[in-house]
Image 1 (cartoon, helix red, strand yellow):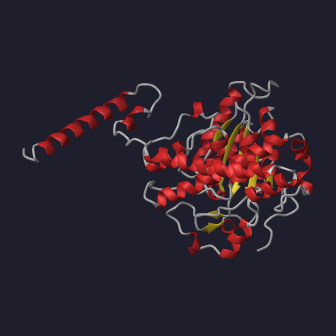
Image 2 (spheres, rainbow, N blue to C red; image 1 turned 120 degrees about the vertical axis):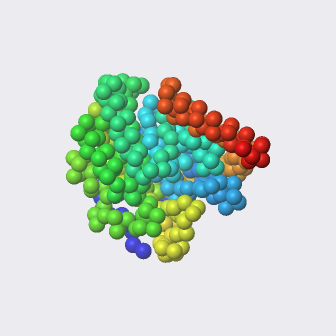
Image 3 (cartoon, rainbow, N blue to C red; image 1 turned 180 degrees about the vertical axis):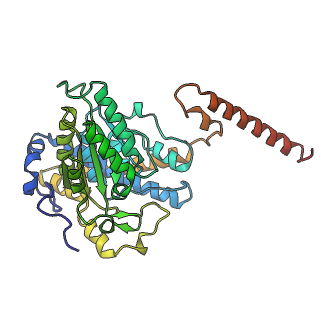
Length: 379
């Protein structure tokens, strides 16, 4: 398999773990030069923990403890790099595979497992996760949610003030399949028309379930942004440095009031689309091997070791990752069963007469069913 990248692709860290920046990376390199060494230690830790979570989640589903699991192995570099580029006041809208983004923003990942176990109808309170919003299963709908939110950030005057603690931006994550949905294209229209402080972050993992990206678009997806009048950049999505640098640049542009941008992160979904999928039916082993050799975690590890990182750092992290996964398993199995009335509790933030009526009708139905069961079904 040949390289999917060309001269226009931003890549800073090579698959071998050396700094070998492409010409397209030049506008973003100062951000890497100014980054502290501790940033890459944090990035490596977050990616390692996210992968441990991913494998534990898959195991839990295979053992019948989750209804479904959505793997993200292989996409850690794109997710962690972009999330580290965001500021605390920024808001991040995921789809349903952004586990590493949530981890980086402080989400307790047992919330993801609770959602997939059927113990919650929503997930978590974004106010407790540095603006990391809830997962969305309807393809591309989060692009509209994010664009509307970003319009509000501009209307509220939280853009272009020059105050680094106040100016806000929004990131929305979506996949290559989402670009074929009307919602995504409508979001791009509104974002440009209203100059939203927004980054559209496309994780092109090559497959929309069983449909390859080459069947969805005859041209690189980042070039679609130019038709909407906004910058479009393609990055090596398995290069955490490229993800951090390019996302940081365009988030700064967005907060300054310069409007939206579009980033296409070329990466790969190593596992199935979900645990209900069998990728061996439509993918070649050679393709998977090609991308495994470009693992985002392995290349950052090679870089850190070359910089003199002590072996104890990696050994300790492996122990931490195993403990992290075991703790998530324990807490997942201890999750309480959901109560039926919970579905009415958080439909609206304030009291709603229609919801109150539906709740009362449901209680009446439950009581009548229980009475009927108690009486043995006799009238």
